[in-house]
Image (cartoon, rainbow, N blue to C red; front, side, top):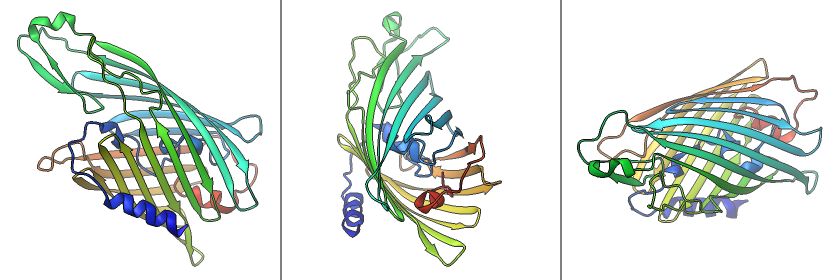
Length: 313
């Protein structure tokens, strides 16, 4: 375990100073939503759950255990937009549990994401202009040839992941964009998504009867771009204070949040984080609100690390 923590720390320090071209490294990197980080975390609590998140986009989702087995399915829909561009993402995830021993559980999962990106501009173009899409790719549009501009793109994106649940630790590793889809919205201009590598670490350490200390670390690499974060949360009964330091290449920021669980079945998280996609001199913030709600009351109490995971998830 110590070697893994050291490995993640070294990766965090070895960041390159490059201009980010893969801004999707910033998408869904909050460790409180483990199913977004890694498909193997889908249905980690073995319950039927409703998920909702609102920030600069809107996420809606469902997760469920299948026929009382060790299989889990999840569905998430994302709707977000930037200037002149809308995106709809429909993600289907499947995960399966494998008991390695009494104290170790292995999870494997995969997901398929179907995206629709649409360019829209209601006015006639009288001058050349450019815009940057969700992935950091810049498009330059010639007003004289605006009729030749392809206004939408549809593609499938595939990911695989695995994770290990120990007594008080979760370790995950996954690959995104393994089919390297063409995500360009402009006809004749190919933009292939680079494969993204992710590693996650979350630990839960009891301090007395009521307090739990939760360290976390994330690392993502996509071609020349790297994202990392180191966080520490403190849980007291039904309230959790979250804090993370984040870095995208040479841009740094933070993510601060508060999670509150009520009636044992519902969790609300609010957070404020630095928008690392902006320049160093023009940084702004992003507010986010998340609701995790278990629709049916669980038939039995959670045990071991799953009982601790529920303070975040």
